[in-house]
Length: 483
Image 1 (cartoon, rainbow, N blue to C red):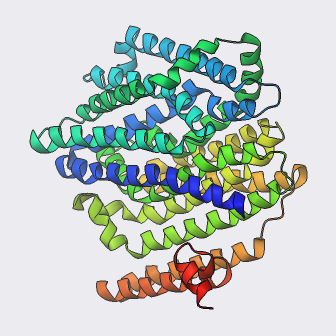
Image 2 (image 1 turned 180 degrees about the horizontal axis):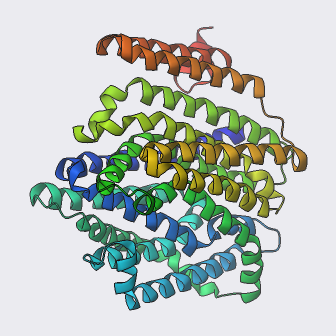
Image 3 (image 1 turned 90 degrees about the vertical axis):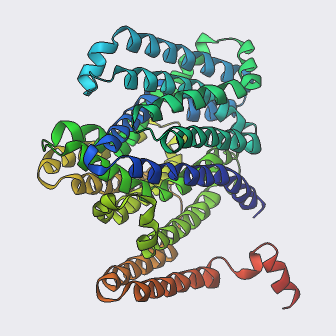
């Protein structure tokens, strides 16, 4: 139980930076969608460029985040040397990428469809290179259990970004989407300078033999990461190439804006991952490690399903985060959220092959899932538009999740509380169906009341069977005292 409390505490701290930071960043969505109409397609440009940079970031870090945790916790390895070697390796790749983009800026911009705006390309190229380099000091902070500094810098990054966006788009009344990219470059540079102390760890030097071993471990993770990020952004990258309608940028903008609402699930998953990865690798040799993973899986599913019901139940309120002309795309929200839940489950399941040093399995699972996602996008987007993008992610994650679970039962069986988890899944499906039809049959206030009641029933079930009130801090102390 002490281990679970440690995980919960770290998750709360990382969650603060992730959830609060992303929520503050969400304030940019109503700002962008208010200043950039859906018809202009400007938000489609932002959606497409951010998708590209997410993919490039995975390539430039080439799996060194997870690899660092693995090697820093190995017996006989010097964590400082592991950090320095990873940092020099990633920095070299980022520098090479930046030089190549600047040298071939014109053809790259033309290929991406931004021949008239090459500044968009070089600004985001430099930003993603800087983000790749600073990813290693950030992962070092996690390994050193410096969650507070990690969270503080993440929040500072968001604060700078929001402030500069408000100055340009609100006070100066600008409308150029390119300024969002210039602002990102500024904030990334500032935060990287704040990691000056961690960068001093580079003095430990570069160990070529160590890097070879790390790359041997990480190459399947790179493929896994590429497939994983493609599962998240391939639709936004492929959309301009496969959707041939004249309203392509408008449709992509609508999809990108409404997906932002569904990204609350990504916040929860990211917060859990930040705490969970060092937690599991640090307790590799503990006898109760499998039990901890099974328990963590159960609570992860419970709270993500609760978040799903809250977003779906109050979508008529939450939708005001984006401009009214983007509301037509709200039908993708529950689909994308369900896909994100499966992605989180897949991440939890992935530790069996990471701990067994069989990371190639992750590459296989994610590769198959990604292939399905891309195929659905290519085949169905030209006919059905962005709704096919949402379903492609759903089936891609579902496939990877099921494959990891089935193969994991052979190589590293973990006894998950399947019956209890199944109850929550069934409850969620039933409540979602009731919420969906309630919106059609009842007035707005009536459906909101009905949805609130169902969410309370779900919470009551959690408190009754899996999270008793007596275990809660402060409140639990009162109930234990008055038993």
